[in-house]
Image (cartoon, rainbow, N blue to C red):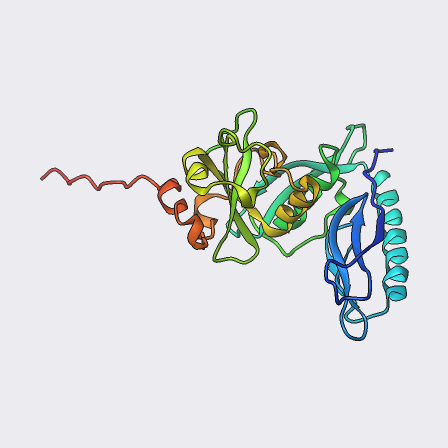
Amino acid sequence: MNKMPEFKLTLQARKSPHMLETKPRYDVLVNGIRKGELYFNMRGYRGALPDVHGCMLDLGEAPISAYRRQVAVLNREAKAELAKAAEDRSVVLETYDTAERDKVVVALGETPVTEGSAGIEMRTINRRDMEYAQIFFDGRPIPASFLARSGAAEPVSDETPLVDLIEGDKVLAAVDTDDPAFVLLAIGQVPAGMGNRPMKALDQDSVADAAREFAWLTRMAWRELQAAAGRNLVEAEALPLIEGRTLPEQTRPSPNPAPKHDWIWSKLPRPEAVSEESPGF
């Protein structure tokens, strides 16, 4: 039996930060890590609850009792899902990019391999699902039963260079892109004297000088990493990069930086221009 990660969803009441708000707020916690909050809005609480796959469930305006009942349902579903996954001998062996930025192909096979084992299965899944699974399983084998199919796509040969990470690298900035499902992350060593600052408080001139590598990541995976890091900067080694690479160049969305991140345009690597040679006659 494979050892599965835990999933325990809870609600924790806390005093509202606003003087005129009489109803308490509730932190939404997964294994003690804050994933969001519920707040009272006129006729009921608003917010969202994550399930074991990282999807967010919004009940609309509802009493806190309805949210508590849904928490119990999601915890039961997670327990059943992880129990099933624990018995699954077919796991992710390899992951491949495709020509579609939101899809990857995974090779699934049994481990350990024994006589009579089934062959390799190639399955197309959402990149977001794969990145979330990499974070959730945290180095453990990812069971095939945890990954839902998503249409079909063909693997592509990936000539994207490896993201060159060195010890101590952090994510120094995150900017939106023209695809709302993806963010662009600037990676490098923390500028001197700023090791204890959260990302939003980093001096951008220093960040611009320190940024050395860039990676494109789904917004959902980025949200999970931020929740786990709290106020600390996200470790670059925690990024769920496929085979240590980011999106292939042809599938990367363009950055859409806020004014304070305008420096990113000059730092982004540009493809080398290929000059056409004269035919020689």
